[in-house]
Structures are given as structure tokens and as C-alpha cells.
Image (tube, rainbow, N blue to C red; front, side):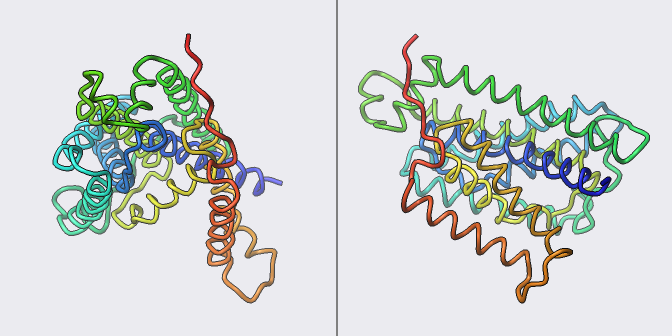
Length: 297
């Protein structure tokens, strides 16, 4: 029974980590209409920043704080060249930034170990057994999940959140009311990048190792799939989407030990999840859980 429990805990930890990523994208795209196709870049920045800080002997919470600050800085800076233009320019810029950054970290060994990455990253909680370590990771990750969920729900219901949705729906109308939409979009990207950076820090301390090949562009598209399937603009929905994705993704790794099928289980997972994504887009484009209507306080 120990192995299934360990597998379940591992799946829940990954669900929480990528659920935070999905929440950050939901703020950027679901609430503000900003198509960030470089989510993996800020995930990677957070992971490397947190790893370098904790490997230097500083506590985990300082590593996460640093990860959020550096990710927010890059999120704001990277967006500035394209944020005044159409959304597709922002999508192209963030996608390119993520891959360029990964290649720099891979080829420049002096920055963070190059292709070998960083090993021996300290965990958030020191434990004496594998099982208790999993429970410790679960507690730490879901403290962040709950914190960010409450924060984003409060932000959504505030006048600031309603302004972000106004920008999403009609930026020109928001500008006609005297709102500096460029400034607000930069803020949304900075906040979303900070949240994504924290998930990167959690990812690094959970694996105790990070390397450039862990941050391929497919991570960005996985997070987009979580948001689209769960429900764009709905924080509960994107967390459900993260859980569904992890059930497929982690499940394919264990099913191969129990099922004899003429196809690789990992490839089968991508096929099934891709089919699910197509079905959702065709018959329920708003996602499994629709966006809630704005309720004025």
C-alpha cells in the first residue's frame, strides 16, 4: 500500500505546483486578456533563483521571496517592448524569451551549472523519512496554493480586478475612462510572473535538482491546457484543470506497469488529453467551470 500512497501524494504535490502556475496564467490571460506563451520562463527563473539562494545557505522562505521578486522584475521588463502593441506580439516575445533563457542557462556553465544544472537543493522542511517528506512537501505547497487562491479571489472582486476585466473586454473603452491600460497590463504580468516564480521555487525544493531540460516549452502549453479545460477566468476551474492534467500525466507513468497495450502510455496520455482538449473547445469553450459573473459589492 505504501507505493500507491506515495504516488498519490506525489501527484497532489505536482497538482499544487502546476495549479499555482495555472492561477498565474488565469490572472494574465483569463482576467486581463494577455496571452503569455512564455510561462515556463518565469517558472524557470523562480526555480533557479530560489535554488541559488538556498544553496548559498539562506532559508527557504527567503529563496521563495527572491524567486518572486526576480520573476516579477523580468515579467515587467520583458513585456514592455510589446505590451503597447497587439496581443500576438506579446505571445511571440514571451515564447522566444523562454527558449532563449533556457539555452543561455544550458550553455553558460558559470551561471548555474550549465547542462548539469544544480543539485542538492535544500528542502523546505527537513524530515527523516521519505513518506514524511512527501507530507511535508504537500503541506508547504498547499499553503501557497490556498494563499494565492485567496489573494486572487480578493483581487478579482476588487475594483482593481474589475478594471483588469474591463481591459480584457474592451481596452479602448477603459482608456476612454482615463485608465493607463499599459501600466495595468504590466502590473498584471508582474504579479502573474511573481506567482509563477514561487511555483518554480517549490518545484526546485521538491525535486532537489533542476536543469535546463526540465523547462521545455511543453510546460507552457500544459499550463494553457489546464486553464482552457478547467475554465478561463475561473480560479476554481484552473485548479480542477491542473488536477485533471496531472491525473493523466502522472497516471500514464504507473499504468504502464499494469496495462499491456501496443502503444507507449506516455504517448497515449498526450493523445487522450489532446482529444479531451478538442472536445472541450468544441462543446464547452468556456471550460468545465464557467467564469463567475462580477458581483458589485
